[in-house]
Length: 432
Image (cartoon, helix red, strand yellow):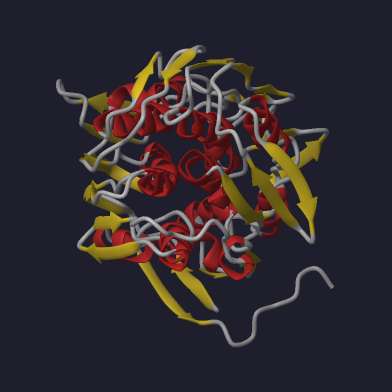
């Protein structure tokens, strides 16, 4: 187990290329199971979540080759319909295997997934969706046992959950429906860019999907899909994280390339409202972010896309911690997603959390302290706070950040930060 040692107070400067989207890559990699022909996917980030997914595909019998961010997958006839618990338990997003396995084989055994701890993330919407297409579902021994002896049949399915549309649920239903008989209409579909990227990939394979990016997606089932080549969209959360880093920890600003302007609108708008400078180029694939001379407090209400993303509230909380005034963050998607706040308070932040809302009173500065990551985005918030803090901070349980940020320490070093990854032989137990 590694930890990250961050020497705070060194200003960031320079230019950075943003990696491909982790959240788009995972269902796209799973969708490779939908054809027996090879697919080639570029800009797949080298993070532990994508590595776990590729291990699962290999365990199922797919041929997987990876080189310099490009993955080639071929899933011949005879691949297994049963996934291994040892792999699936490591990653919540492994649930997105359900759709392609059911579409191709009409049966699957899938252990209930694990993943990060940021509140209840039930799979009931995934189960309800596959049942609507005619599948039978049982739970036995911690496994989902699903089959559809007569194949999957298109229908209309509403994917709205208690906290809004589900992204992976929409992904799963799209993948299941592409080879179903007839037409499937997905109501209350997630509109996230990652859903659109998956639909684009499936259409390149020969699927007939309309309406991705809107609340209603229509999938016309086809008999067979074929191989294709695809480039994954930029990671909007990684881009947003470095945009916040520029506002917190730079003087001249940072330039971020390989981004998509329209995916970053909510993040950029909030930074501008808080007094910082955000300038995109004409093509919308590069942005320069500079800290404002007179930063202001702000308010966040997380919502499904195109609203402010829940995956960016922890990072902005770190910025609000050193921003004058009182800022308010309310997470409507995961109301329990505030475990980073107690760690930020160890560094001197003034934060009160109650009933899914954090109230942050800005302080003049943070000070170094040993802190512990609790989930992926909380880890990013702690890194940002450590970069801005006085002194040297140790961030334990670094494996959380390795799930979704490609070579974060190397990227920070390229921008002038002083960070190093070391073996964590004596991780503190803050919970005792």
